[in-house]
Length: 537
Ligand SMILES: Nc1ncnc2c1ncn2[C@@H]1O[C@H](COP(=O)(O)OP(=O)(O)OC[C@H]2O[C@@H]([n+]3cccc(C(=O)O)c3)[C@H](O)[C@@H]2O)[C@@H](O)[C@H]1O
Ligand SMILES: Nc1ncnc2c1ncn2[C@@H]1O[C@H](COP(=O)(O)OP(=O)(O)OP(=O)(O)O)[C@@H](O)[C@H]1O
Ligand SMILES: NC(=O)CC[C@H](N)C(=O)O
Image (cartoon, rainbow, N blue to C red; front, top):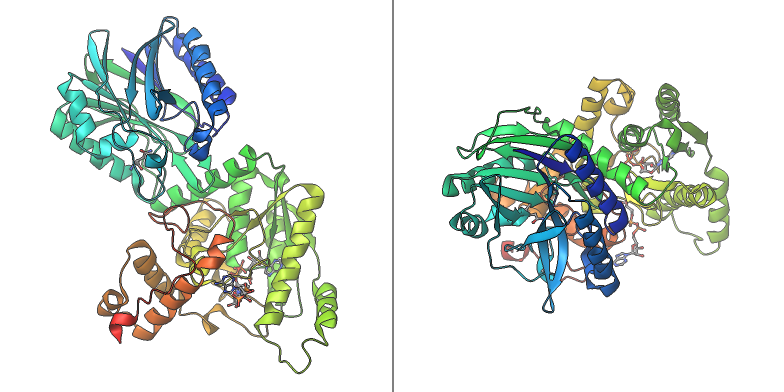
């Protein structure tokens, strides 16, 4: 038997477009003489459809799309994910359709409600197994989080499943593919069935689904591994109930997987939201250089406009290195001096600021002039402004509201500064794109003379360790000090992180690559008087 895994890039809400893609996969699969097509989770609606699920007109369109799909199943079986209403409840479902008839419908049993998932807000959990027979093989159906727990897979095996079909919308974070392999292997060891795992691919706001569909036999041996981050239809051959040995796409390195996730996240945000391209401020620093490299790989040089906006504090090498980078790439490049506008602002504020020294106010004003210029270019030409702040800066609030935070998509929002350097080196190994001096220079905001980031922040290796422990691992201050971190650094950084929640809520959305980003999976109150330092006193 031949089964197609339709690892496709659904767009949330584009029910007509998603239906067309599924029909294309059915057409191709028929030409390939396949017996069955398996889609990702909620393939018809895209994942996650969020509060669209509360709309009756949304469900009417889903129902109409299911009718259309039925007509395309002559001589082939389709296992398709879709939201389903029944008896006043809403289910995360998968229907098995063959020759124009729905022969079975499965309702997801384990609804994830942790990290970035909110499924309990929308769905009722199913209770029953779904097993159907084709070509003498008994196929069970599960949906994504079902296989992260033992109940639903056991239920399917108990109902006779010999091959488990799993429809997934499993988002990327570092090392996620190994986690999926391990968890599926556990289920196989418990139930002795083979598993065909079809995952969604593509960017959806802060999430990137990385594809990487696979097949494992009943011994837990990986028999087929499909490539990550690409949309395609892959075919699994079953010999009886066992998938036969096929292509194993090599696992991407950590740096390659993160880089490709950032590329896909940006590309899909720009494409799915209909922007003609992107604009960014290019400063001669590492963050904007890496952001530009990612934009080039995501969109191509002709869709990008880089803008250098020097001030009196901008070092000559910042301008030289920016010119060198764009000249090598061939992207559109402008230089707009900010001094005339900045001086005009100071003039307007002169009476109000009389007797006050130059401080953060004037630094932020420069960043805001740049933000205003970029947003004006965006309004005039339609390109999306992408911001360049990284996770370390987002953590401690080291960015200016309505300044360098002005923009629509934050490419490096979940990338710690130490990883920014590693990704820059990684990208340059593929082909030199970021001038080496940009990587080697000490980071500086260049908003006052001789400024470096380390004037106000601990060195990035230490800062990132504290951020990872406090934000991603929920470590206490005592845990971090016990692990050997300097108490002053820890307390200072934790205070900065807590105080900056208001800023993160106003920051542009950006791709999640860690197991806990500042987004859906970390919802802290802004007004918050919890003092993590209290027990220390
Ligand atoms: N809880 C709260 N809820 C709502 N709003 C709150 C608030 N607390 C302050 N605010 C508001 O926020 C303002 C402060 O925020 P903001 O104006 O952004 O300014 P602020 O955070 O004070 O300063 C910007 C920081 O970013 C650094 N920076 C700027 C630019 C580039 C870079 C870089 O190298 O990448 C670094 C800069 O060195 C400084 O540490 C306050 O004046 C107040 O209006
Ligand atoms: N001279 C400039 N010209 C254009 N954009 C700038 C300039 N200075 C700052 N920006 C924009 O503001 C962002 C934050 O800038 P800044 O240089 O202050 O911090 P950074 O974190 O060191 O970033 P980078 O490493 O990119 O310089 C930059 O990434 C860039 O998008
Ligand atoms: N959509 C889901 O049910 C995903 C759940 C699962 N924990 C995953 O990330 O793969």
